[in-house]
Structures are given as structure tokens and as C-alpha cells.
Length: 92
Image (cartoon, rainbow, N blue to C red; front, side, top):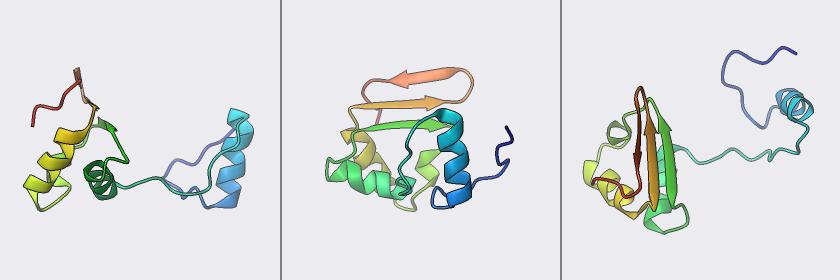
């Protein structure tokens, strides 16, 4: 089975059906949160964890204090590059 090699929207019905068929699972057609939305959701306590792969989240928002405030709220945060780091309580 061939999968898209670039990012595609979950709202694209052809791609959506392709992954549902491959994974034998019903998938949500609503896109997830982007990083800035995740920070806002952390501040209102509706989003309590973060897994980040090869991204410097501090550079995602021009207000570094906003990033630090959000990261202090997460109950767990995982950053993976190489090697892997796990912070049960963020070091912010």
C-alpha cells in the first residue's frame, strides 16, 4: 500500500480512507491542535501533556514567557531528538 510522502490534511477524504483502511480504525476527520493552540489549551488546563519530536518549541511563539507558562502546566512532557529525553515535570 502506498502512503502519501508529504503532509496531507485529515479532511482529505481519499487520504482519510486510505489510513482508515490500512489501520482498520475509524479516524477523526477534525485536525488536531497546532503548537500555539496547545499552549493556550495548557493554560486553560484542557491539554495536559506534550510529545515533541525534533522541534524547538521555545521558538514556536514570539513570547517566550507564554511558552514557559504553558510548559509549567503540563503534567508530562516528552522531547525526542537523539538521544531521548523525558521530563515528568518540565524544567521551566
